[in-house]
Each structure stands twice: as C-alpha cells, then as structure tokens.
Amino acid sequence: MCGIFGCYSFEKDRVPDETLGRVARSIEHRGPDATGYHADERAALGNTRLSILDLQERSNQPLFSDDEQIAVVQNGEIYNFIELREELQSLGAVFKTTGDTEVLLHAYIHWGPDFVTRLNGMFAIAVYDRRLQSMWLYRDRLGVKPLYLAGNKQTGRIWFASEIKALIEAGVEARPNYDALAQFFALNYVPQPHTAFQGIEHLPPASVARITPEGIEVRTYWNLLDTQPDRSMTEVDARQELLDLLYDATRIRMRSDAQFGAFLSGGLDSTSVVGMMSRLQDHPVRTYSIGFADPRFDESSYARMASELFGTAHINQTMEPDATSLWHHFIWHTDQPHGDISFIPMAQVAKLAAKDVKMVLTGDGGDELFAGYDKYLAFFGNGDTTGLRSGWEKDFVRQSGLLLDDEPDKLLRGQLRDAFYENDPYRELSDQIALATHQDPINQVLFAETTTLLPGNNLVKPDRMAMAHSLEVRSPFLDYRMAEFAFRVPGEFKLRNGVTKAIYKDAVEPMLGPELTHRKKQMFTVPVGEWFRDSLAPFCRELLFSGRFADRGVVDIGSAETMLNQHISGEANYTRQIRALISLEIWFQIFIDRDPSARG
Image (cartoon, rainbow, N blue to C red; front, side, top):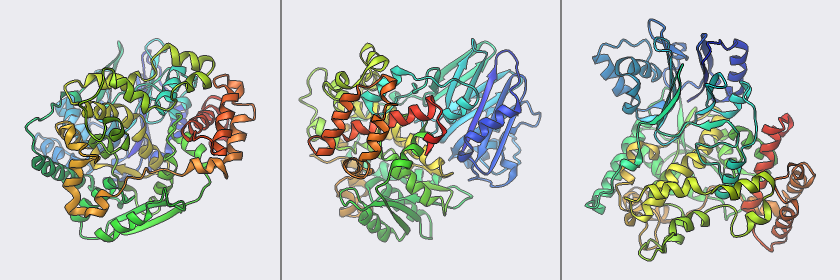
C-alpha cells in the first residue's frame, strides 16, 4: 500500500524536483516508510511507500529495468505475485527483491502492456517506457485503489496521483465542478469518473490509459458485464463455491511481511472473513472494533461474540459524540464531499489498529455483491420481482438518493441548481442498471451499485480513512473472482423470503452459528442525527449559518435553516440532508477557499 504520482510532458519539459517533493509530501501519510521519484524531460513518476512485502530498501520505488529504460511504481498489492514470479522465473526473469512491485516490472517486460490481465490484486500502477516514450496507467478491476488524472495535450502536461490534493500541489487549479456536486446531492457521493473539481477525473476501474506524444487513450481490460448468469446453478453448488472462493481470497490476502489483523464489527461480512483467517493461521487473529454508547448503533457485543467464537485477540474502543474536528479530517483525506458519516468511525478503528499492525482484512464488498442492504428488500418486496412496473429502474435510483421529492427545488440555488436540472444527476447509477439487461432485476441493481456506489463511496471510505493512518486494508470479497461468481448467482438466491444475502448466510452459518449469521443488520455509522439535536447543534449553526456558506450562492439558506430547526425539534428527520450540507461547506473551505484552519 502506497501513494503514487507523476506526470507526462508533451513538450519535453522536466518537472523540478522541488515540485515533485511537494507533491510527495502531500500524500506521505499513504506511505511514510520511504519516498522516491524519478524525472526526465518527458515524464516523472514517484511513490510514497508503506512497506508490507519485502521490507528492505531494495523494494523502494520506483523500480527500474536493468537498462533503466523502464520504471514502475504502484499503490496496492498483487495477491498472486508468488505464482506470477515463479512463471516469470521460468521465462528467464532474474529478481533482486522478494516484493510484488518487481513482479510488475518483469511482467511488463515479458508480457507487454496487457500484463494487467494476469493480476489478482488491488492496484494503481504507472509504467514509464522511455524506449517508446509511453506512460501506462492501470487501475484494478473493482476500483479499490484510486488514481486521478488532470490535464491534456492542450495544457502541455497530464498529471496523475493517488489523491486529488497531490494534483493541486502540482499546480492544478481547484475549481468546483457543479455538475458533479449536483450528482452528490442526487446520490450522496460523487460517482466516478467525475470529481468535485473541474478538470480532474478518476481513471475508471478496470481501465488502462496510454499516454504518448500524440495524447491519451483509455480502454477497459475487464468488464463485469461479460459475466453471464448461470441458470443451471443449484443452491448447493452456490454455497460451496462461495466458501471455496472466500477461503482462497482470504488466503492470498494474508500474504504479508508485516504484522496484520482484521476489522471485526460482528457483522456478517467481517465475521466471515475473520472465521476464514482463523482457519488459516495457528495463532490468534488480531481484531479491532469501534463501539458507541448509544445501543442502537453499538455492535460491540456481537464483535465480542465473534471474537470469542474464533479466539481472536480483540480490542474495542468506544467513540465519543464529538465529530467536529473529525469531520474536517475526513473531508481533507477524501478530497471530496461525502454524505456518508461512517467515514468517521472507520477512521477511528483504523487509528486503533495502526497502533499494532500495518495491514488489516475487512468485509467490504459483501453487501453490494450479495444484496445485504435492507433497501433491496424494501424495493423488491422481500425479493419478489414479478410485479415491477415500467420505469422501475429510475424509481430505485431516486428512492435510494439523497434529496427526495421537492427538496432539490427548495434547497438548491445558482449554478448548483442549474446543474441539477440541466443534466440528469442520477444518470451514472441508472445507466449502469440499464446496461445489465441480461441479468435479473435484483442483479441489475447489484451490478449498478457494484460499479457505481462501491468505487464512488464505499471503497473510498476504507482506502482514505485507513491510509490517513498509514494502514493497508484488504477485502476478500473484492477479489475479482468473487465478483464474477456473484453475478453468475441468480438474484433470487440472494433475496429470498424476506432475507438479505440468503445464499451467503446459508453457506457460512455452519461456521458462524445462527445468532451471528441471522442477527439484524446494523449500519456501521455514528448516531450523528441525535448529536445534531444536542451536542452538535452549535457546530451546525456556526458552520452553515454564519454567512460564509450563504455567500457561495448554491443553497437556499432559509430552507437549510428550516430543515435544521425541524430536525432539532424532532418534527422531521433531516440527518442525511444536514450531513451533506456540512460536508459540502467543509469541502469548500478546505479545497476552494484553501483555508488551512479548516482541515481540523
């Protein structure tokens, strides 16, 4: 796990070392163990390293070919690097390190730019080939690792980096992208490839970009749409294949030369992963969780139950109701406004784990692949898709969105309002549903959420909040083989008789027991709606209604204040809307105003 950055200059203009050093410092939290960069008149690439595999200096990046004509940096981990290394050695490759980055270097040399199709991992990779005057940029299949781009041939240079703040440090101007912000108010996150900044885009998951003196070309190397549903699959077959995949995906994610553990909330996904980990090592798994004083949000008892079941070395910490400084901290590290407040407890549990380990396994991805959210049951009538009316796809998108009914009309103003109504702000999610017509309706929705919600929000959370504390996270459910399997499984296996993740629960119940398997799902979040009514009420009023937010001209302040007052009085529940407004204003202060005091 690391951070990467670099650029390609169309006019052969070498970037000063001072600039590269400044860019590196902006993301040194992603990799505090070592920093390295290389530049010539055509290109530059650099890395901030968090050492997980081969902890020696010899694996510091960039790594170069023997003739120094090819250089590579990566952010992430290649889980099948051992198998690839052995195959490359059989082809004559000679290795100087035992890490996975050198595997990428030899893979490019021996197999060419399409080597990426052989990788099983989470990654953002840059390969500079001086011989061809080409820069190759790669992103993993499901978008676990971020990679942002800014610039084009007309501007003279294309920059790339693991975080947007690094691009800004490189000199890219920070200007609001109101179309993306409108999508934020539609979906509660900014969907990829858009960002909240004009001129900055996210390289899409499963994509490769080639940059040459002629310009940039982007193509996909893997498409989940190619997975066809298996109508002949039996439930017995599905249960066994799920367990086999989870076991193997967990096994290869436990490859590490540094100490590691797991996040354990006591929920189905994290408990299943810890159960598999306990089968794969002969000493207790180190596990970590965050609890809350409010029992409606606290899962500590289930985490303890899971810990006792699998004999883990468990540490739990109770989070206090103070999110003022933490909110600024999470927006600074995510670079964009996010309405999901669970970023805050994720940061806290990452901070807790980072005291002992450098890497953890998590259960991320299970809900999107196997229908774990209650909203799926609510929409599909406990799993029945026979009565869906024409246009149901748009109904789902709007019902799961942020601003509902006439709220956009009441709340949004200026360029933000124009963008909301001039372009369909739900389009990224609804378009993905429309692409998967070869799937049943349940899997159509899950496909869209896997390709949109997952990389746009739910994978941003573990990456950014863990990397803020120099901690790597790995999730077995995000193995591409698991994703392909999930979309061969019929939707009716996933939502059945009012049960979410039905086939998955059937598979793991013998390992977890009935109570941990079938306990009511709790969202991993903080009781911020309650805090808005008491301890955080002054924070809300000061941030939103002191005049600074009103001057931006993007929100009707009177409507926003009415929402807050009705929420505090208990007349209505506007938790999600208030969260979004707070995140937006903090983002403006940090990135557009460039106010250093707003970072928290």
